[in-house]
Length: 424
Image (cartoon, rainbow, N blue to C red; front, side, top):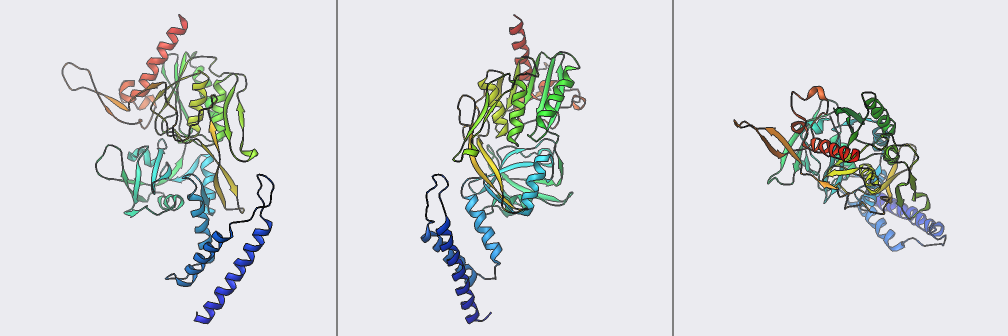
C-alpha cells in the first residue's frame, strides 16, 4: 500500500470513528438515573489514536475485527478475573459446559497476578488423575509463558484433540521450585452426583460441580440410599467443587431446608438483585449432616455450605473455601458471541459476603492422608494429601475409610456423635 493510500485510509477511518463517537455522545444515557450523560470524549480519542497508530505502524497488517476483539477482551479482563469476552468457541464451550460434557483437561481456572490459577480439578478427569491441585498457579503451557495471556487464550491453548498431550508448569504452595505435569487431553463427561453407603445408616453424596440437573440427581441419589435403609446421617462432599449454575446450588440447598432464605444477591441493576427462599420439605427429614469443604470449594459450593451453616442445618468441616462470591451473567452480543460479566455479589442468609473471605468451617481439618505403618506395633502414619480419585467402595483395595479419605472418616465419626446426642 502506497503512502498516499495509507494516509487516505487513515483519514477515512478517523472520520468514520469520529462520526461514531459524536453519535454515541449524542445518544448515550445513564440508565441508572435516566439522565443524559456524555461519554469520556478525551479518553475515547486516546483510544482512537492508539488504534490508528497500530494500524499504521505495527509490523504486520492487523484486521480491524481482531483489534476490536482484543480491545473488548482487555476491557473486560481488566474489571476482574471472572469477566470475559466470549468468542464463538468460548460461547459454545460455556453452553456445553453447563450441560455436563465438554473437552479439555477437567479444571476450573481463573486469573491471579497474570497467571492462571486452578480453582479446582474436576473429579475423575485427566487433570485430577495427573495430580493437579486447587490453588496451583500455572505459569507455562508447553513451555510458553502465560504471562500476558488472557484467560480465554490460556483456556484455548489447554484445549485440543482427545489423546493429545500438554505440559503444565505450575507453582504450588510449600514447594521451592516449579513442577511440570504432562496431561493427556480427553472428552470430559462430568457426573455431577455420586453416592454410597459408608456404614449402616450413614450415607455419602459427592457433588463435583453444579449443573442444570444436579438438584434432581441429588434427590434421586438420596432416595436410592434410603432404599438401602433409614439414613441416620449424611456426609455432603463439596471439596474441590468449583461451582457452576446458581440455580443448581439453590436447588441443592432447598432439598435440605424447610424454610427461610437460601441466598441473596446485590448488584447495581434491579434485575441482578434476587432473593431465593426455601420451600417446605427436607429430603433427609432432619437427619444430621456434615458438609465437607476445602480451598477448592468455590462459588455455588459456598452458597450451599453458607446456607446450611447459617440455618444450623449442617456442620461445615474442612478448610476455608475459595471465596468467589460473585455472579456472572452471560450477555449475548450476537447469536454466537457474548460477554461474561460480573453483575452481582451474593450473600449468605445471615448477610455474610463470601467474596475473597470464603466460608469459615465450623470444624477445621488439615488435608491429611492416613497410611498403614510398617512398624511391628501397628498404628497409622499421617501425611498431607488431597481427595481420592474415587469414592467407589468396590475400589478401596481393602483400605479402611480413614486410609481412603481422612476427611470423610472424620465426618462420619462426627455424624455418629451427632446421632447419638440426638437420641439422648
